[in-house]
Length: 165
Ligand SMILES: *[C@@H]1O[C@H](CO)[C@@H](O)[C@H](O)[C@H]1NC(C)=O
Ligand SMILES: *[C@@H]1O[C@H](CO)[C@@H](O)[C@H](O)[C@H]1NC(C)=O
Image 1 (tube, rainbow, N blue to C red):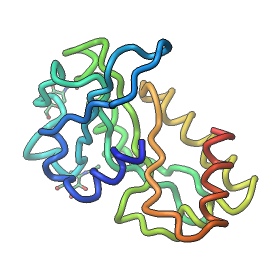
Image 2 (cartoon, rainbow, N blue to C red):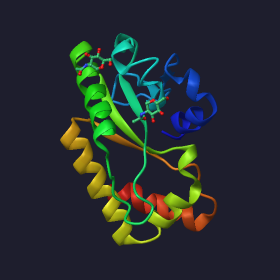
Image 3 (cartoon, rainbow, N blue to C red):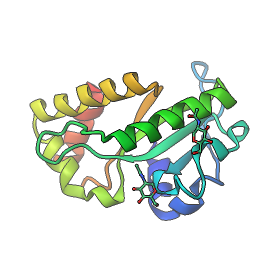
């Protein structure tokens, strides 16, 4: 996940054309992951329905950020329409492709995650709201794109967030 995350910040524009094959194979997940980030700001020039889904196993919608006060998502009608179009277009083209919401990203700034991850109550707010949005719109999973934890305490908070998610 961290490889994908780091790549996204550096090569975001190229991301939809690139695939990342995970080097690690285990008995539990024998197939390689071929992931790509779809930048939501391409919605006019390159709609999600234009993605060649046959190339990928996982496609990440970038980015969705929670409110910086209550750490829940406040999804506008236009964003909800885009999210729904993303999941329904991709699953219609290639039902096996997994769709994920990538939360945060470079533009969200490091303090959003740092604040949210610093207490159990705000971590829970983000997790609950993420799952609610993902289920409601038909996503298969979540990608926590914190760019980046800046000290050992924040790394520890990130571990807690992952463990509780
Ligand atoms: C759709 O794309 C436009 C133009 O890039 C952008 O301003 C807008 O924020 C995008 N919508 C969403 C929901 O990302
Ligand atoms: C998604 O949006 C595209 C382009 O705007 C449109 O052609 C397509 O029909 C939409 N797909 C769904 C499933 O709503």
